[in-house]
Length: 242
Image (tube, rainbow, N blue to C red; front, side, top):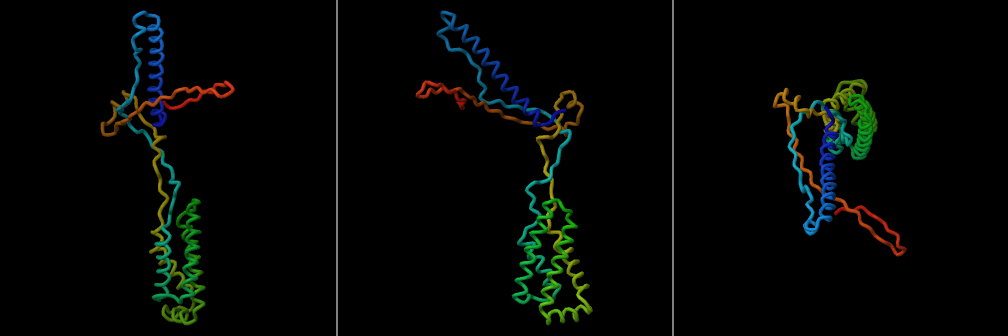
């Protein structure tokens, strides 16, 4: 059993070594041709593989999952709008007073950025959102307190003597409506480090449905040494593509 990247590397390395052996053999043939009075006028045979196509059966023994590095848990515009609408619905208003709406929207945007930072740092989703709910509830309480008419109406509407139960309603509504908008940190399969089975005797014992076929096309591109001589007669060799 081997890692997929090691197995593929060995295949490509094998093709390169085959080309090296072929070139060494061509060099020996060239020397023999040079010493032969007739063959020295013949072109030296040289093998060159333009394309090598491999079709290899293998089975994946195990895969490694890694957390997504580019994690974007929140679509900010949609998320912030949903939070604001929850606050508006709990307050039973079509819109807040303009100055209060501006404060609340600004606070929500800031709280969302903090939430996103915590999530990206690996903080548990629910714990992070619980902190977010407390922040939104505090901001909601602050803007309601700045509007005496609205605060009086809400207490009468909900039949409460304090805002505690109203704020609990707000947090419960956020949990039901907004929490689901947060994307979970997904995982991606690291194929390069996957363990694969390539031994023929093991593949014969496996269910054919568990076997996949690896199709690999290798295109040969050579490198050549180029020699350049400067004004002082110094020679510099550079390896460049053919």
